[in-house]
Length: 292
Ligand SMILES: [Zn+2]
Image (cartoon, rainbow, N blue to C red):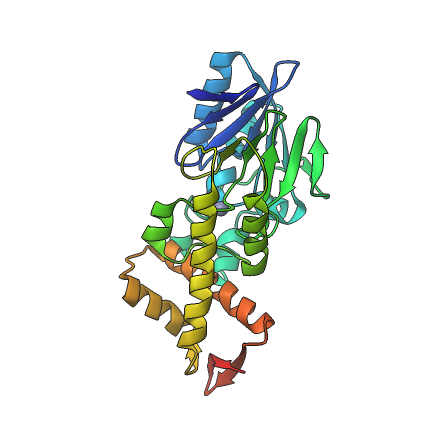
């Protein structure tokens, strides 16, 4: 069921919140489509009950749980799909998501619907961000994904994708998946002063005040960077660092989560090396990270 947020802005809550803005002509723009055919079906049912024709889908980023309903919806409506170029490449070629996480032909355990959506066609690339799509403002939110965007409606509601995670996610996984640390920190800072009336993260609850969540995510990123830096008092490989966090935090994860955690650590290693603090060295056939 659609929940009314303000003016013409609604949300279909679920494991992944789907946004909806209803235009003056009665057509709708959805923000993301959820994980799979089931979430696409739920979205179309909610629109049908309200007598709304879906005109556009804006994908905030290419992760399977955000664009996995696209194919179902695209087959049944004439809605056009929008995404930024780098995210569009993955939405159209979903093999790329497990491929980049693994770094080669991904094992079947990574080619699941949670990491590999059904392919869909992106009709329009959003090449400039920030920009406007009719009455909607496209807001850059890079970090969790390089081309991630948010959508601000004229009702001052911001659909903010996976720019930050709820505290229970931070508790559960410890290593939140941010593909790029520096852009993620900038995004969190910018959201601190954004001034929307209502924020809708893709995971978690709708909120009028996200200060505590932003601070928790920023602190966690800083904490992980600092701890990796300390761990590198002696050289370690990326995998040894992941193992260290898994043991310390008693993380029990799936194969998919392991690769997401490993990629998150990779991003912190790049961040530290860009700051000139560490460097990679291949020692006896193992890529080790060492202090400068
Ligand atoms: Zn995501």
